[in-house]
View 1 (cartoon, rainbow, N blue to C red):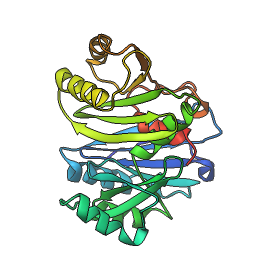
View 2: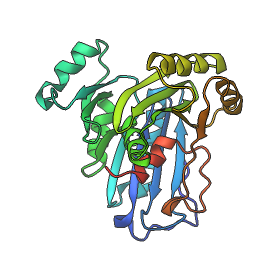
View 3: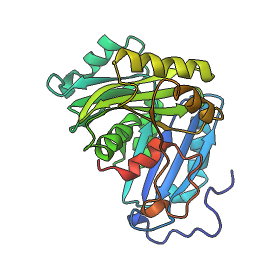
View 4: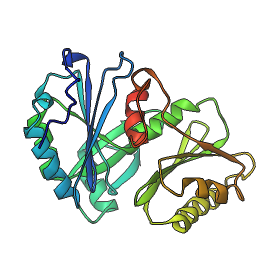
Length: 275
């Protein structure tokens, strides 16, 4: 495999850079940026037929690109998995995380990890395949493991913390969508829904909107992601919901002058919110 960095990119101060590896069901990707440097965000996606294939492509890239072994300021391993759940801080105990996962999700898929979101008052429990987890531990010095929903929840809690209206955030994906709902500073719901096509996406959004009794005139719907039917989706939703907002990656610091189309919003949010 050829080098992943362009010839004009020279890394002289790796201790200032943050590296994020994003693992998924069919895609692995990595981002590299300097928090204090404009136009510094670099994003590269590696694709396979499934998670195992994408992981093989990533490992090949890892061993053919020496920059992965540089002493970065931080290394984040962000995982997208459908196997996750939320546990209130009041009842969560780390020593019982496996018990929670076995009780709530019968189909075990690897190592159980957790992330605490203090602002929302709960922990996210999720699973990362054991071979991926062990490879990241061996390959990087003290990597931080994080579920993809953490930066999304943190970002939207912080961004609209002074808005009392209830909000639904929809993150459009190639084969599904994420839905996260908030009321003021309270987190109401978060889930991933596998689906294909406009009609299924419309169904999940409007079903959750109705179940939570959101107000079609006053409550807010934020949409992120890039699907070919996004504009058509908004037109259809506009028949039922008045306050609809497109969410794009803001040109803050390292995103200034960077083409952000194709960068997952949750990956960008990881660099924008305080964790």
